[in-house]
Image 1: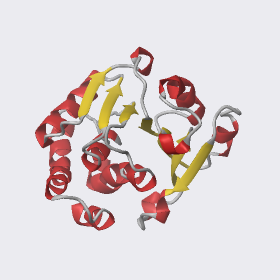
Image 2: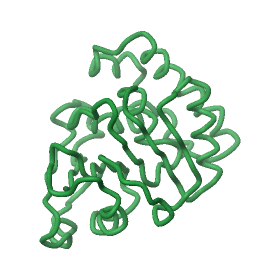
Image 3: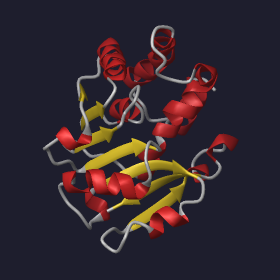
Image 4: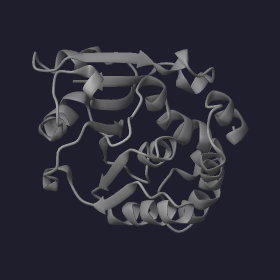
Length: 208
């Protein structure tokens, strides 16, 4: 997949956004040759497995101007970087416990001129701010991210106001059952938006 397919799913992008998405693969290829941020065998599926997957959150939920979003365990910048391009008026705070990955995130965001992103080498426990939305991608179980990030949400219990919006795959029954009664949840199957086989049994999960 290249950006042609990406743009079919998101036809309303302006020229600046299209150019920013177009630049991503070459930037990550270059950085990946120095630091292993993305599995090298996965780079041929970069736009499908990383950019389009990240943007499933945009299909599910509109991040509004002025909202504050924390991307927890962003790794090389996913889903944070693709979402920040999609929502240029939203504030993004990307954190990861691995300094080299945050170095790459900062280099990429500077190269494409992303002005709505701050990226720091930091653990969630060190963050004291409150956020409207917290995003992430399959780096921990749902109970783990709920316990780690729940106290960093500005509003709890209102799905429209935000919450934890997370990319996960497979059978999530046990994880949902382990959340306890303090969390409400929704899930949306990504294949309802995208036709690629890769997205079967992959979900956007919303905890609030």
